[in-house]
Length: 67
Image (tube, rainbow, N blue to C red; front, side, top):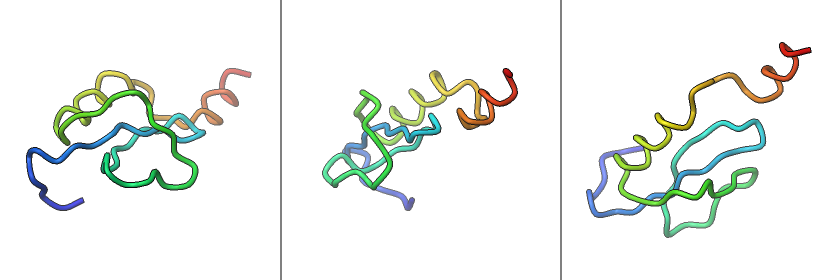
């Protein structure tokens, strides 16, 4: 992503592997991604991801290692 207007709003998104990213709030979500319940500035969304995404391994890897 490029530098953006600080007032621009983003949404935190998560895919089926429980990986997080941000997406522009005024655009349709990309295929395979769902809104994860947090909207704000780019910095706010990235801070939220840092708080909630504590295990960077994809869900399928975590499940395989737990077996």
